[in-house]
Length: 91
Image (cartoon, rainbow, N blue to C red; front, top):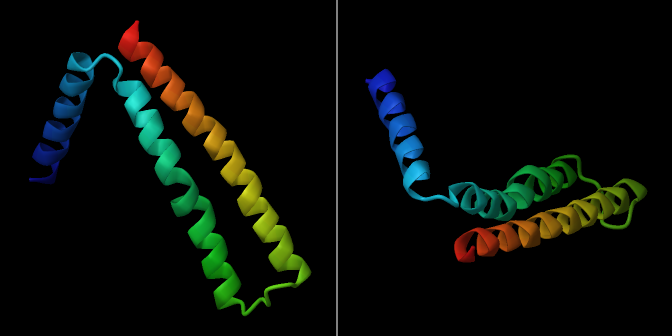
């Protein structure tokens, strides 16, 4: 059952990407939106809570700066993905 569902999923995704020529840009936009909260923000916040790190300690400030820096990178990736989507759609 799992093999059949995975094969159907891969086939559907491949067929959809061939019918939808700018599929890669749409996936880039979705990835840019989902990456930062799931991979950076939530794990850092969970770490701070689990280890009982205070709000103005050195480690907390460094981790928050890291979160902000990665947010800026992801925002640039999001803008680039939107540009690519618009370029692919109207060209």
